[in-house]
Length: 219
Ligand code: TMP
Image (tube, rainbow, N blue to C red; front, top):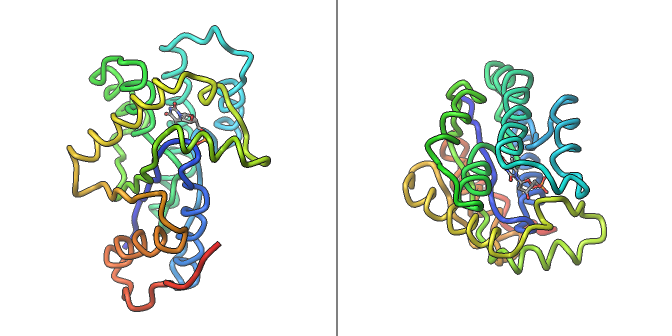
């Protein structure tokens, strides 16, 4: 029994914290879990990430941007995600194809059908079993991220708030279209409560007893 779980949400929504808590909870229960992220997770993907997120690259065309995110994705799927799933490891990915639909699609108001074709080519049709959406107002997310001295501030975060708001609204539309796959969690709750909601959704899918849910943990 394995699962491919993705985490989505505005910048500063706490994805990294929650994905780490879930990885630790799974590992403690003897379930092998691999944590990765997009864009990145491979040597080639990290090189593409540098190009994508360089704040000097203001001239990047929208098609080039979509292709680069998907090139990094193809490498990650082939090199890391598919082999791990085949070995029975649960894969947790910080952002995946829905980020392309939200940002390159809804964010810029571009054609979703074209992007879906591109995503299908990049992933070879691999889709997550569960997508956790950490829901926060994008302005609040960006404010939180600005307050975090260790956080990377990238070219995408430089974009206007209207872009981030359109991407956020797009996420909610995507979640409403596929309620079975998406878990929408209020990301303004305490860290431990968010983790408990995620655990409640993940554990039955892995047939792990919910009664062992870590409820008092906070970080
Ligand atoms: P992060 O690694 O801090 O989450 O930053 C990734 C940024 O890249 C974030 O602003 C969202 C953006 N992004 C896209 O626009 N399209 C994509 O397909 C992916 C994976 C990320």
